[in-house]
Length: 541
Ligand code: PEP
Ligand code: MG
Image (tube, rainbow, N blue to C red; front, top):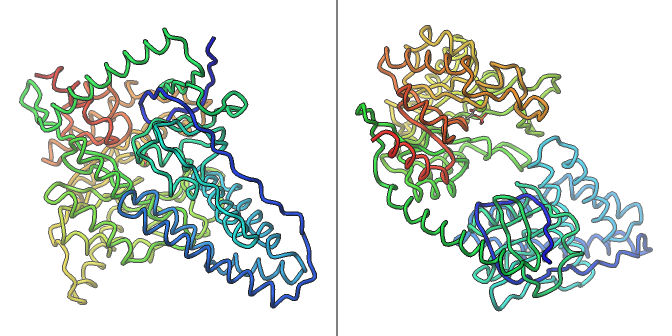
């Protein structure tokens, strides 16, 4: 009899194979305090920090070409080892007579707890990164060897959790799946699985109690299901499913370069939503005709200070050059709501979704906004970049943002910096007030993109992150369809393009409705593009 366990499935794939268990050796931390002089311990600690930094740099160098997304995590690791706040804590505990390894443990526990207390999954996951670095440092202090995973034939890796340093040296060509006891959709294992296109199921409670090396399992990621020691029938069923999926994949590949034109002769552009360069690569692979939404907030997360103008410029330029003549719509930062950035020291609000968010924040934090606009404008010289403001409620906000943009352009001209002088500026329609008064502001902008995730949240007054009010996520409700229709009509009457970049742009039912309403562009997660294209092509031709 097979055993079925549930977890969170990552990437829509099936894996069948034998498992290998990855267990980490526990570190012996018995010497809490010692009598060594402070200077000796400090020297010991600084030497171990240098050694750990070198190891991290090697991991980064080895990975940066093959898997830039995973490599980036090691930059965060290194930054912690150079962080004054962390180093001060270490020194404080050494002075209190803690042993060097305990000083690291105490500092890491405190800082990771601060991250864990932030109400955001991404930050909670970074708390694990901090513990990972701490563990590495303690191992170096105590002279432990790193545990490594050595696999010589195709295996599904099973672990309590996988840290970046556990997987960095792994020969991934033999990994056919991951199962972890802990983890969430934003955990390191999930990020890695997505980057490599390997099926994974994370958060499978007590999985290690059920498995030993070489047990056979099936991973059904769509249903978050781990089937241990499957029956012959179960295996045959899943082998058949793998075959069917391969056929679908091949068929989707065929539609990749076919433009969507409706039976009425209307061309609908299929764009992608991305958060970084790697997703841009994926978007092109799946046939995106441009980027409808570049969520720049991700550049600002997981760090202690905002990215510099140069760092932002390079990040935007890289994406612009990747897409060449294809449009890349860069959304200025949409921080606030559920996306918090500790280093901005924003005031706590009772209703963050109704507070200082998106453009409202940028208009208050002008330096932050101007730095981003400078970086975007400079990058605009290298591709087809457009600017988009999020969370707009009234005309005056657009006017103020445009004034700042003009100010930044003048500054760049004075400095003889090149930028695209004809750069287009658009807004996201996410708030009913702007949807219903679009005719008042249409002359101030070149295009519109409907952010349906927020438009639905604000129309029904239902927090998009609160499960209890999820029943009010009603994209097909007449209230939403009326708003969308109105926005499309105003845009078309004024000869401006209008797209959708909320989740409904990748929803099988909603795209047919949006096509009927004559939407010009749909922007969605890269992996959704082939299927949506196919649906629109079948339906409309
Ligand atoms: C939206 O609100 O639909 C949108 C695309 O923006 P985000 O999901 O980033 O708020
Ligand atoms: Mg939004």
